[in-house]
Image (tube, rainbow, N blue to C red):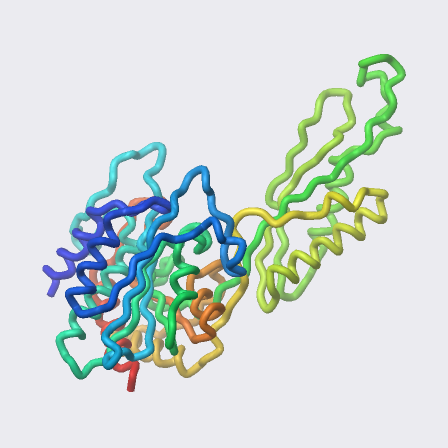
Length: 393
């Protein structure tokens, strides 16, 4: 069995599949699933329509393409209603290291570019369905492989929203918290960033083209206004929202009152929507502006990756997953709900079905030397196989 694990991991990692770019990996995955009698569809993602998807993020057109995604269904008579999914895109190579980290078999770990994030998840799904497809009595899941690293707009959101007749979903992905099976994702926090501007007022110069001749006390500094607003932000104590001023900049000059200050506010939230967060921030900024004579045409603008929150309310589904993990590992399992913009939100929000995410012990996420623990990876295969085999019953 170990040789089969080595073979599939080596095969997946040897094919680069960087975020936002097309790859031959889906050709390989399509071929493998079709040999197991899955009906496989591969489509180009349409990131140009991201604004029509309330769960998506804006794409980076200057950097990325419109990579393909894969949706596979088992034969109708064998369809269990379950969804197994994983993302097949990986981090790009770093500027300092342009050499792809090939698969290697260490003493206690498997190494390779993208193995933790998330080719181990892809491998587990393939290994599970290949094993179970041999028994015609066993029901099988639908499968999605897609890009997901830029907020879902490059395929994951689109792929999952297209699915039909699903009743539960398992996201196969090692935990970024480095806790392995002891934590499973049952919720995804909302996340967003807003860009703001505050404009000051220059004092009149008493000498022509000589900023130093103006009395700064007669002007209004954009930096001073910004520090006042930031002080207010730091005192907001909303029970389901965390606010953070994450960046501030001003292009000032010596002896000149700062006329413009730009800053960004990052937000984490639960039990609310992006629209509600945006409305709250704009209302508070408008109130501040009214108190300080600031024009209302500079309201905050949402920017960058964003996601609505989601939570799995189906306790029975969660307990089934926990029990399977404990059965194969002997470990007790806690529920992890701090991860922001997790892909489990897509089946929850698009399909209205319970979703849980979990995976083996792993490390080196987001550009590091990625690895997965051998024993834990083998258990990962066993758990997903067990859950898939018994889901219909």
